[in-house]
Amino acid sequence: MNLKQMGWNSYFDVQSTKHEDLNQTEPARVIEELKGFFRVLSASKESLAELTGAIRFHSTSRADLPAVGDWVLIRALENDRASIEAVLQRRTKLSRKASGTGMEEQILAANVDTVFIVTAANQDLNLRRIERYVALVWESGARPVILLNKADLANDISAALLALEGAAVGVPVRAVSGITGQGIEEVIATSLIAGETAVFVGSSGVGKSTIINALFGRALQPTAPVRESDDRGRHTTTSRQLFFLPSGAAVIDTPGIRELQLWDSNEGLAQAFDDIESLAANCKFRDCKHATEPGCAIQQAISDGSLDAERFGNYEKLQAEARFMEGKADIEVATQAKNRTKRLCKAAKRFYKLPENER
Image 1 (cartoon, rainbow, N blue to C red):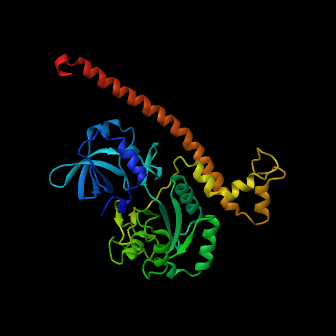
Image 2 (spheres, rainbow, N blue to C red):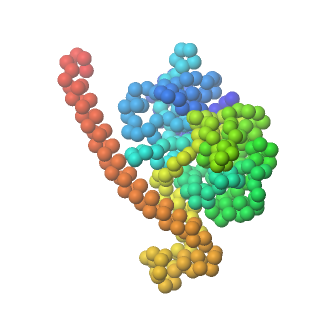
Image 3 (cartoon, rainbow, N blue to C red):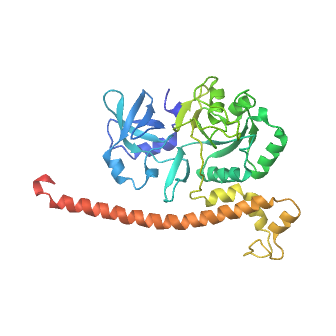
C-alpha cells in the first residue's frame, strides 16, 4: 500500500517539507493508540512507535500528541520498532472536551473526511444528542452522515428518518442494518471514497463495529448483543483503530461515547442550526432574545409549527455551553502558558549551573 492510498496528499507534502532537518525519517500514519505506544503504518511496514522526549517536552496538552489518523514522521529502529520524530499538522480534527472537570481537548480522530454518526432505531434514538454530534462534526471540517442502524428492527422507520432529517438539516440520513446488510452498499457507493478516511462515532452498542464488519464482509471487530432489560448496547470496542477497506477507503472505529461536551464549536453550531440562525436574521430587533419581543421570527416559527420548540431549546443550551467553555478555555490557556514559562526557566537555570565544559 502506497502513501496516497493511505490518505497522503499535497497538504501533507507541504507539512513534511518543514521538517527537512529530520534525516532518515519517513511518513507513517497512526492506526492505533496504545498505552505509551502507537501502532503506525508506513509505505513499507507496520511498526510499534514511541514519542521522542522532545515531542513530549514541547507538548502543552494531550491534543498536541498523536491521535489515530494523524500523519507522523518516524525513524526506524530494530525489531519493527520506531520513534516518532514529528507530528504533521492536521487537515481536520474531530475533538471534544475530555471527560472530567478539567479543561482539555481530546482528539477523537484526525485527518478524516467523513464522520458517520451512528444511532439505532430503538431506545438510543435521541434527536437532541444527534444535534450535538452534528455541531461537533461541522466544527471538525469533515462531512457528517447519519446512519440509522438496526433498521430491520424498527417499528416505523419512515417516522424515525423524518425526525432525524428535521434534527440534522441538510445532512444525509441513511437507514442501514449491520446484521442484514440493508443499505450497506449505498454507504460504500456514496460515502466511502478511495484515499479518504471516515470515522464512526456514537453511543455504546449502536452497532458501529457491526457496520464496519459488514463493510469488510467479515468479523473484523468484536460485537455483543444488546441487553434485553433496557435495549441498550454493550461496550465492545476498547480503542480507536484505523482499518483500510478493499475499496481503498480508510475507516476508524471508536469506543462508545457516553459524555459529549463540545470544544471550540461556534462555527459548528452555526452550521448545525443554520435554519434557526436564518430565522433569527428576520427578527424585528437585532438584539432579540427570542422570548417575548414583538416581531420575533423564532417565536412565530414555533407558533406555526415550522420550528420544533425542543430544537430551539437545545440550540440555546448549546450556545450557552459554548460561551461557558470559551471562557474556561481562555483561563486554561493562560495557566498553561504560565506553567510552560516556569518549566523553561527551570531548565535554563539547570543549564547555567552546569560547568562550561558540560553545557
